[in-house]
Image (cartoon, rainbow, N blue to C red; front, top):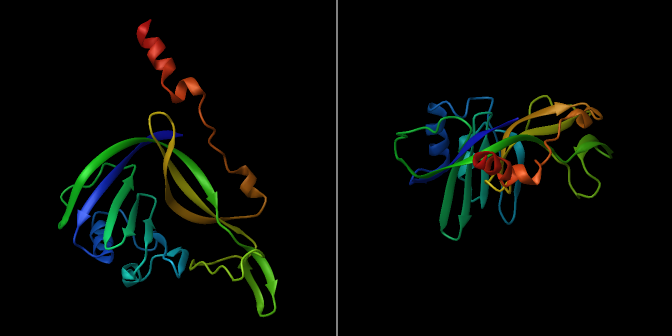
Length: 205
């Protein structure tokens, strides 16, 4: 399924927690239906439900906050930071204290990502993890069934040459192992479609 997405560059002096709160008022990040993950050079925050906004304001290098409606991205470089909003809905306008510096449109297709972690029997009990990692993988998600895999629905943002520009996370849910094979993959289009050659040919006829 193809559609259209909007990539907004935001400028604001708000903290990330304040910005997410403002966007929640716009209906983009509903309570109990918003997830996040983040990392810096010393710590990784695995995907989980966003419960405590203050966690967003730690000194993360990268933060992603996402829901079915949008994804908010923050990336730090030195003392500066960049902030972007990706959504397939009509972009919000007039957010107090937020300047929309630019809006770009992108073709969007649906996809999936399977998160790391399977059921392991460890000395202190059963947990989710991977043998190649020297740690448990504790996703802060409700009703984590260790017999199931966590899957993320994603939106794939392409440019007009069908080059992948961004993967927007939309939601997390669990799937029984083996059922992941039933997730429909979105194949790349034929080269002439990706490059718009077919449309150009039809226009000349």
